[in-house]
Length: 138
Image 1 (cartoon, rainbow, N blue to C red):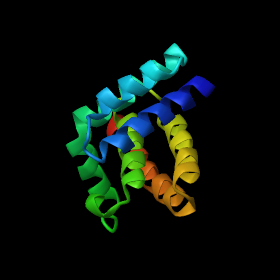
Image 2: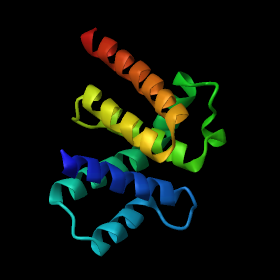
Image 3: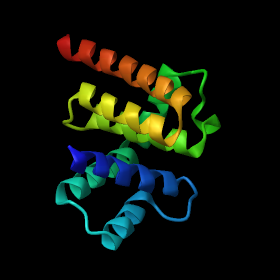
């Protein structure tokens, strides 16, 4: 379980740093991985999460706009934007069970941003998971 949390933190750090436009998130992640001796599972999860954000960023941003219209993507703090993009990427585009991903990202939101972001994350991911569950059942 610790390896997966570490993987999420690595992915978040790369997506966050990429917000400042110097390098793409995948290059940032590879630099972080080269600088540390981490668990192979953490590295694999981080690579997958970053790849999901890069491949589906427009869809992820549209999902944020649709599920939380009062919080425009461009108006979010860079950390909050990185948290939401990473979390939504995992919920929508990974084999991780939604409830597991939601619990992990809600906790990371509280740690990295605070209680208001934790509540926003919980609400956005809950709405997304309900939509995915309904469309899977149809």
